[in-house]
Image 1 (spheres, helix red, strand yellow):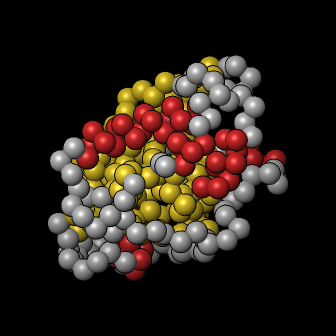
Image 2 (image 1 turned 120 degrees about the horizontal axis):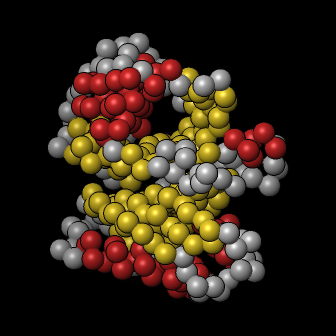
Image 3 (image 1 turned 45 degrees about the horizontal axis):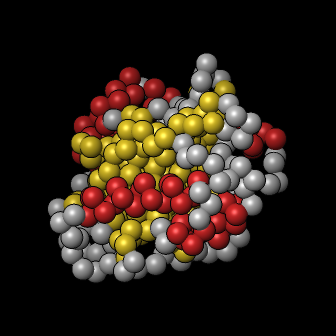
Length: 287
């Protein structure tokens, strides 16, 4: 991952293009977003963000576009000083993932996060359709060497299907969501691998891991096999041969305590069906 400077004072320009999505257009959209927040420009921000935006904040709460617009209008979003680095743009057809780390200050406290913002090109325009923030403040303060901040080598993006989505694509996607979950908790490595793209990145409080590291961690997990956690409030959205799923995972942690985590998972349709290319989770803060 490399640094990507997003601060700008340029006026917002909402250009349309039918050209293939590339990094420069995603970077421009990110700059426009940052500028709109910095100017408390709710109109400009709203034009960049999809009406069906789903954002998971650093406490695990699920926010809508209306929630985000209110935060910008009130000035809360602008006064939360944020610096972002280690930013990487990953493009899958008409969908782009912007992944990185951020350092922010709010109410006199400093916070560190992993973040992902997801942009989709629709009708020639880029719209942000999802975002996810994961709090890593404790790990950063503890300087935990076991928490990888990024893969130690580049993970190239693999192609997605070129054929049109089938009519039952959403049904197939929801089946894949359930089946990969059951395969993970039953420690069925071969079955689970069918749903894990080799270009997957897994983002959580304990770091960023690759597909192979995720599978190795599953193999070495002494808690598994175990009864699966519940997948609640599963929401899916399809964008051609890409899809975004969001759900609340409810169960117990490693020492048996009640646990809730909000997930955002990006799927790509390939020859063997739906594969996960990005997983991010945030534990809900209780009490």
